[in-house]
Length: 144
Image (cartoon, rainbow, N blue to C red; front, side, top):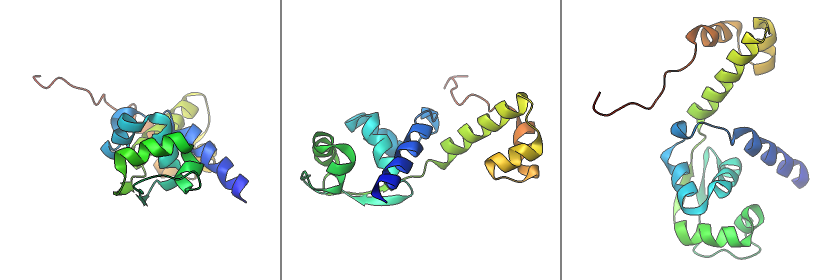
């Protein structure tokens, strides 16, 4: 059971590491800044959509040490020890990646119904995503 959960966690983390950074919530980017992206993705994979009570110090037996490795858990606890962190789901970033995959599959000839089945969405949603086209760039000049 634990092995299956670990495999699911790994698959989820691997699938999401290509999320657009500009769409990631600031709290995830803060974790990445202090502890590295590997730690951020592991924390997000395990606790995304919930909260994490960070201990002052990590022990080798602590669940964070099991998740991150002892050295990374110590670094994480040094940065965030004693805090209750809300770990976001990063829904906007996941949705942007999903929608891009839908548009790519559609350009490659996949029909609306096949896309519905693959992504678990209605045909109306698939059509709306495909008609919306590519999202506009989120970077702009402050003085434009």
